[in-house]
Length: 118
Image (cartoon, helix red, strand yellow):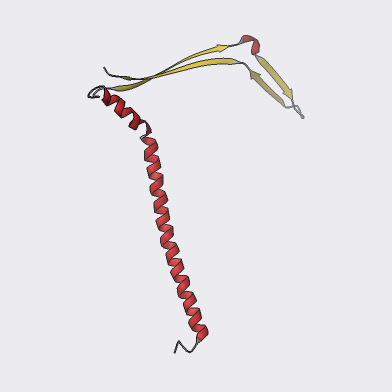
């Protein structure tokens, strides 16, 4: 019965092929989303544990590593140049006024990081 109607048979094949492609695309979309989500989770875990991988061998190299602490200190010195102070006023159309103040400063920062074992 279906073999005699060529146009109907071709249309049925086209619908079946379209259904197979749609199901395959849906399955691939879910698989791809899961793969991207898993890769994102790996990247987040890597970033969260980035310092621990390099710090752990240094702590345990000197002995048991029990009680070792990671200390960080920062020292800053800021100097202000008194001759560099500039006060600027700009008048805009309509009577508006923009005031800016600028001053030059020099900052020296030293960051000291070390392992401390009491």
